[in-house]
Amino acid sequence: MPIAPDAAWWVYMLRCADGSLYTGITTDVARRVVEHNGGSGTGARYTRSRRPVQLVYVEAAASRAEAARREAAIKRLDRTHKLALCASVRSSSSG
Image (cartoon, rainbow, N blue to C red; front, side, top):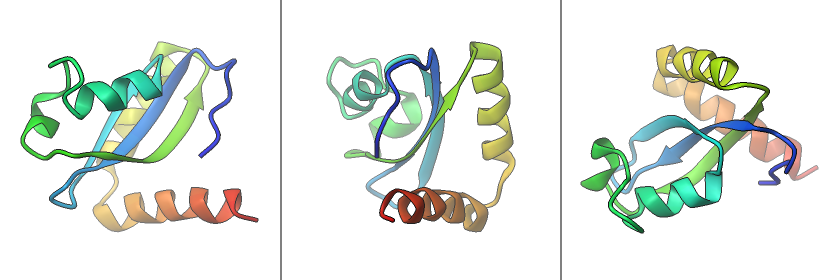
């Protein structure tokens, strides 16, 4: 999953060990995934009991406000639509 280095903020989705999905925002996706997996104890409370987590979706945002709006929109989606979003990224990056 390629990540453009020039974006300031990122919206990301993780698949937890129990199969659930977690959505968040960050300025450093790689660091945040390590944190969610217990790298420094600063992962989200939700993911602490659902480790390991795997990055399944990432999307660039121009600002924190834009990232937060997109995060909220993704969180409103049902599971089927979230999985379709992840699948659309995988299929577009493989072709």
